[in-house]
Length: 392
Image 1 (cartoon, rainbow, N blue to C red):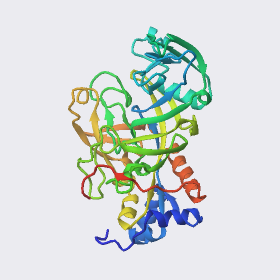
Image 2: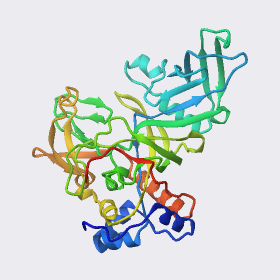
Image 3: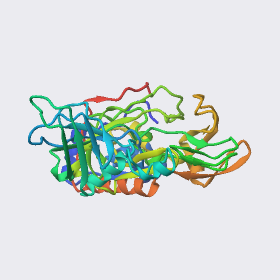
């Protein structure tokens, strides 16, 4: 990679090409081959935008909802949507429902304590699918809000306001989880068999948004993205955003690093890209489809978007003993190419691998975003402020 930029583009120039139908847009998968064959300088001259995608369970997700005033008015103190508790300590009829909140009377929990079939993520999917949801609210009653309870069916169309707002999505790298103990364990990374019986991972590798902009040079507050099948925006750095971690020569972090807080109008979204999930022995979550366009402003960004699965490394971590005890000790490093091969070597043991994220849907998101931009339907936004980072 060159030290001085030979190519310099602006967001305005790229957006003008998008509106004119002249922008060259490729997916992150395609960019790998382009950079390999032509080098980053020529790639930067030829390509304007690289699209990325990821689809996987993202627990730190949820929605702000205003369910509208009743007659007489109510200042809700407790609210349930299809039996799932929502947080009501915001205002009279404003609530937040979290993806991992389980239904309070889940029938599976009565038979198997700690097991849940239905939670906040499922409520969100039901809403975007147009299905009616039972809303129950209770209140203590005030002079201005005398109503002490409502119980009614609502649909997404009935709600005056519904905003997906996810505090931590699109994790930039994550652990590969294994279990070295003698018992099967159940985690947010799925079921892990004893004595290194399997290895689970959860990132779309070279398609993942933050792998393609590892120093957050184009991603920040106000970045327009694909979110849940509609248009969303990066609000700010997500919770647990920690960029100061070990990195490869390409700048790719070798362990969990950056995260995004994102938001978007729930009424634009689609149930294919917001899917409620139940993880055995762990609980409920929401699988989120998310894609970020990366403007190729110069050859440095072209170089970074050319990263391949062979160059992306993560840590193998024991979730049976080390992780619960706060150690997070690495048993070794593996590349995403090795993970995708179906097996990895951990201390001389051949361990089968499986993803929690869907590579097929990640590719579909990158392709959809590519088509939107190529058709002039989706332009890029320059961030008001980029995310906290370290110096490249």
